[in-house]
Length: 399
Image (cartoon, rainbow, N blue to C red; front, side, top):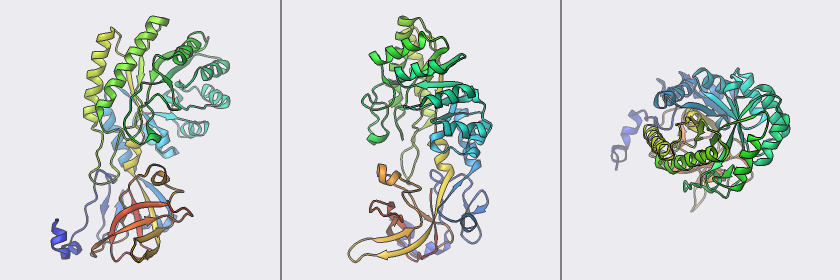
């Protein structure tokens, strides 16, 4: 039991602390109890731009980028644009020395419009069209990650100059997460199984193409990984596969892209990936695997996405209706939902919710924050604890 539960009257005298694991680093309360990010009141932002509204803290984004560069000084850090691909985001991460990975011609166009050096762009995707491949080649992107033998053939057909490529490999690692975001297992749509006939065919296509240069392999184990030890068997498999390619094709690969999927917290107390421990696991395993296979140590590439973007942002909603069901739950309906955040419906994700336009001294009650859409599953947060004096027009934020 907490002091606030023993002495409820204390709540009115205390400004709640915003969990730094969930909220942007510049989050604070102003003198009237409103939550501010970057010294701007979230209520003022909602009044000016309406709701739902995404708010992203530039200072937090830059802080995350610098943290990665400090912890992994010898690795290339590439921001996974799928987490949030807008011009400002691309500009900030590029300014901080990160590359950008894109998954479509649209994301490529955003990165180029933001001034990202094309040589620092990596094109991903399991179903790239010929037009997307041509756009990437014409833009001069640094690397294209191939997903199949036929894609290698298509890329070779549009290349008129030397193009560096990697091949995506599935190392057969199960992260034991949600099936929709477990991408290191063999039976899923991304990449080619390690040591498979399909992978061998892809390597052969690239090796025999006049304008394709195979420089490395890529893998991505999945999303929301919190155990750095999962990367150990992946690195061992990937180095063994690189050694097999050296022996079979006499090609020495110099780059190993370990993807991203670095876990962050969505709720207070959630586990997160310890980046310092990850750096140790990568360094130790790479040394052991390269020594065992007598393979020259490749450059490591990491592709954090949500680990850069997620904690920098919050979503704002206005309360539209509060309804208590006799014998059931209390529903707080807001003006957004699965149209701006489908993760709850897709993955059964959980989110924290806070009242941000004022400080309330009322006791907390358990509610379901529901979206506005015609789906019973359109819920933003189940079991959220919000003040009992919550009313229509109040502003809520989801970090």
